[in-house]
Structures are given as structure tokens and as C-alpha cells.
Amino acid sequence: MSANDICIYGDLVLRQKAFPVVKFDEELKQVADQMFDTMFEADGIGLAAPQINISKAFLVIGMPREDQEPERLFFANPEILETRGEIGMEEGCLSIPGVRDEVMRPEWIRLRYQDIKGQTQELEADGLLVRVLQHEIDHLNGILFTDRLSPAKRGLLKSALEKLAKSKGDKRFSDYAEKFDL
Ligand SMILES: [Zn+2]
Image (cartoon, rainbow, N blue to C red; front, side, top):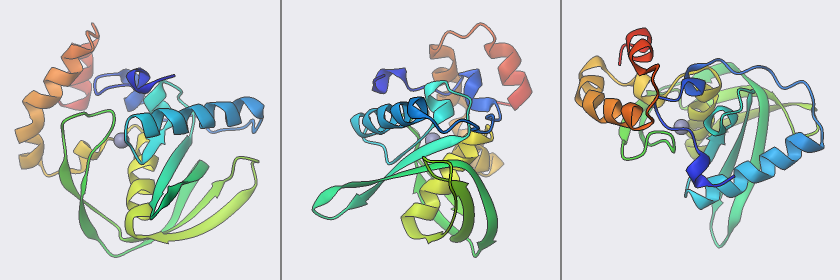
């Protein structure tokens, strides 16, 4: 798996709701490790399984740290239990190359998830982590950050997004465009 294998806007898997993770086995660990490598190769800080064409509810995050390798975080079946506040921050996405924009999201969340061993955990997060978490959890629900922009901003991005979707050469593009109001 390399950065070239990351699904790009227009891939239908990015629009599907991912299935829950039920098996926490060696294979899951291996896929997660490959996802970390792929994400770092692509200079990303978060990657959700649907972005590598696996419609399962897990994601990895590499939290930047000063003078150290990024911290490797894994979340399966995440569920946001509580949110507070709202804040704007610029986002990009490895599946939507060349597009960045400011997105409004809650600034604090309480989250329940399962770790790589399948143990249930809870976490309170803010700052960059909560931003990346919400972006990646959206991927598990078939939502892309561009969906969260105002209609005016989405309108400005329309041709860039259409170009990305068409570059995938997906024959189902016209159905897709209709369904998701590209
Ligand atoms: Zn993304």
C-alpha cells in the first residue's frame, strides 16, 4: 500500500457508511501499520480505512510532536458522546488533493471507541486532535469536509471537485454526481 492507493474524491467507497469492526486480530494490526506508513508517506496526519478502500469503521492519526516521531493513535468504532463549542479551522484531505478550506466544528468532544485490542476506551479531546478526529470520523460515515462548507463555498469548489471525480474515470460518475449533488 502506498500513497498512490489512497482513494480520491469520486470513489464511491468514500460515500459509504463503514461497517463496524468486529474482529480485533493480527490482520487489523497489519492494516493499521500499513495505514500509518501510507499516511506519513502522503504527509497526512489522519487516515480513515475507507480512504484505502476498506469500508470498516477505523482510523489512524499521527499527532505531530516536537522533536519526536508523531504519536500513533488508532480508533475503531468511534462514537462522539458529547460536544462543546464551535471553532473554525482550515482543513485539507488526502482524498481531495489541492483543496483546503475553513470548516466549523465543535472545539471539544467526548469520545468512546475501541483500541487496537478491542478494549472500549473514552477520551476527551480538544485542539488539533479533536479536529482530526472529527474529520476522520466523518469519513466513516461517508461525509467529506467539503460537505460541511457553506453552499456558496461549495459552489466555488464545484469544478475542482468534478475534475477530481472525473479523473478517476468512474463510469458511475453521473449517478454519483446526481446522488450527492456535486
Ligand atoms: Zn479526509
